[in-house]
Amino acid sequence: MESILHRIDGVATPPESGATFEVRRPLDDSLWAAAARGSAADVERAVASAESAFRSYREVGPSQREAWLLSAADRLQARSDELTERLIEETGSPISKARREVATATGVLRAAAGAARRVNGDTFPTDIRGRLSLSIRRPLGVVAGITPFNVPLIKGIKHTAMPLATGNTVVLMPSASAPGVAVEVAKIYAEAGLPPGSVNVVTGFGEEIGDALTGDRRVRAIGFTGSTRTGRHVAEIAGRLGKRVTLEMGGKNPLVIMDDANLAAAIPAAVMGGFLFQGQICMSSSRVFVQRQRFDSVCEAIVTAAKTLPAGDLRDEATVIGPLINARQRDRVREHVDDAIARGAQLLCGGTWEGNRCRPTVITGVDDSMRIAREETFGPVVTLAPFDDLDEAIARCNETPFGLVASIFTAKLSDSLRFAREVDAGMVHVNGATIQEEPHVPFGGVGDSGFGREGALVGIDELTSWKWVTLAGGD
Image (tube, rainbow, N blue to C red; front, side, top):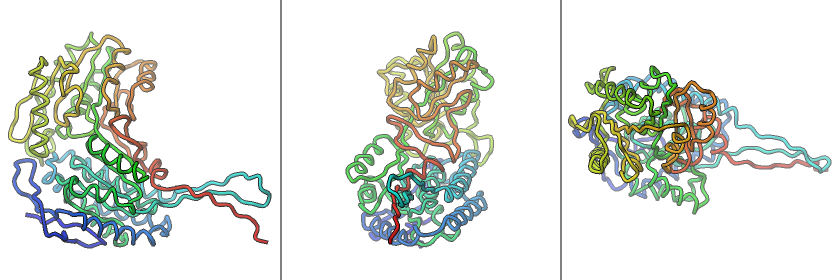
């Protein structure tokens, strides 16, 4: 059994209270690690360390920050096998998804390294003779990063790399279901040469220590990834205390298949978009809308494909379906499916369990009275519904308060452009899956799906403040 300690001021740090909590393997709920159960006192130590480190770190030049981040990317890539194994054990990730996560996190680090040289100011014309008017960007200070269980490596890197690139220091609070990955992230930064205190990690339960972190006045910005309910709470604290905040929250993402769509591309996108990592991805295409003329044939194709998705050894490249993270999430999936069936929906496939794995589930006949229509399921469950025309498809896409990502498959440019304009989502893909990510793009949603954006370019605005400076002759 592994022992997971906080990482404060560059060293492994036991909890002040001595308390720990159990981390269990999603595959079979066996005990995997004992992790430090953080308290407000531990958060205080971590924030103090980050604040102290910030005083000197903010003056580090861009070439040094770039070098550190590139070194971290190299070290992360060199530890790919070790991190892949940790993701399998700690999060129940099939190996293909785990390797994809390592590759994506490495790309985020490299993009952030390049951004270190793009923290630019500007000059302005002025009506005052003999004066120079200019602006500079300054880092904010201590940044809090709150990361989820489903992609803990990607988000652990996202919530640290751009803050570090822009001259800030960080305190990470990872999900209690995946605390070990965040600690490894901090170790990688230390091995790359970043100074002690630049990246700190406090493990524990958000309901016990989250407010201590987000409410600390020394924390000037918060990057959050998690549920909409918790994100709203974080936003309230940030608003009350005047902090910057970026929220990446839930999704109920639609994928639309028009009657002229290329089904050879649309069907795999719908299947993998709905069931990759057993639906535990914020970008999962949990709602699929099909133009009525092709509804029956598309339903049959998706169901056939869903039934064949492998749920074997997590270390087998062919495996797609793994276990759901914990008992609470498994209960949520069961409740959503049972509620839909009880209210008249039709189960086309799935709804059965093999240990902690839910077989890919396809449901039709869903209406607004059902929880599955209104709430994020975060499991391998996809609903199918027909529509008559593009007007109806757009209306159906927009009938939830979520707005993370949407996709449409069509051969018509006019339909593509209209869909992109009118769908309420922070990201739209034409003839592509909902699950897409690149490190330099503005990633995020609207409504209950998020606020602000993550990315190597937009992160500069999110993580620095402008300072206006004028210079006049001193004689």
